[in-house]
Image (cartoon, rainbow, N blue to C red; front, side, top):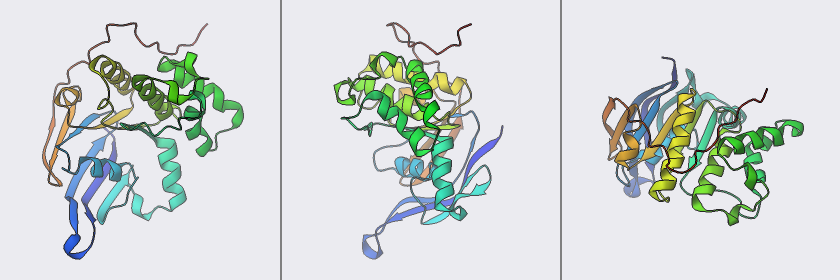
Length: 247
């Protein structure tokens, strides 16, 4: 397997002197293309800090994050931003959507940031919405959607740039079990198509769906095991359609 992310002696300290707190302590880790990885730990264990560093959303106090063998700390800010925009997709528990914009406008945002040609933005955004089964909601305001629909919009936004890696931070944390099943089904369909999936969670059932589980406690990795992943439960309701070419 191709190595796509490596971290070496990764340390993150917040605060200074007597108020200093080590959220991560000399973490070493490699992630490979196409993996499904769960990073599991209790609240305050350092799991979200690790994900933010892996995703280049934060910078380490010490250590290195290598993306495809290249040290991110030596990249210019513009290159880091471009890499995040073109290679990574993000699904967060809090959604981070503009509630007064339409669904389509929210999904279009990464394309604007990536400076994709205006002529192709809408087509790509509508394709992403079709994949998550929300093309009929494109003109709806985001604040008029249910929690599950908002999370599906977040997935559409995450995949609109055809990312190589999706980072998902507690993606089903605020959802009921039936809606959560639909979200996990979507995420693992993408993984089956070759997208590397990195999920931060405290949900053991969600972790069982991944092929690898990294457990973290007090800022340190305490176990890193590959496992036979359990197939996601398919939603009992109508399945979310997958976009297909029509001939």
